[in-house]
Image (cartoon, rainbow, N blue to C red):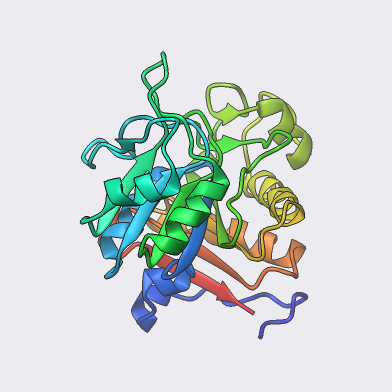
Length: 266
């Protein structure tokens, strides 16, 4: 265990042989994906690496596909029961599903209680659930009522993109920039720093725990080169010092062959 008042080691977990699924505690149970910075792509990536049966779903509106090259989500009619959904989803190792189509050509989210029932009786090893949105921005401020968790959630993966660092804090880059600025102690229009990003993650961890999440694992994603890994490490260390209740924090680059770049453990 690393005491909270000491500098924790940022390890190259990939070279230590830890599997990504185990590092993120995403091998079993209901895993919720929150924050900003590659949630949908990470859901698909983890499902591809998983050896068992995985459901991909959402409690909020989503596009027809989680990624451009992934399969369309199955749109379940609004009146679908859990038993009917399980029958419709049968026969596929990895299967994505959401609610009916909307006028904006998106799919509605699934009721959290139904997701829990489908997971529990549908033969799934893991179910990955998108539980909030970021409007395609690399950072966000949470609104009241977010995220919409599923009963029985085992862990919430809280994503933050290292690509946000250096960008201007405005609506082009940040979803709800006024909330982000308030949490970060920043001003609209200034450049986002590792301290700003870390401060918002710390606040998000507290909010997510307050709505009933048993475990939260921050994931500093998109650390795609050495410079970005260094920025991610700086951000991770600030989060780690400010959130002594955290048990782990990961640094990832989900588009790379070896996506796990670092892992902090207590």
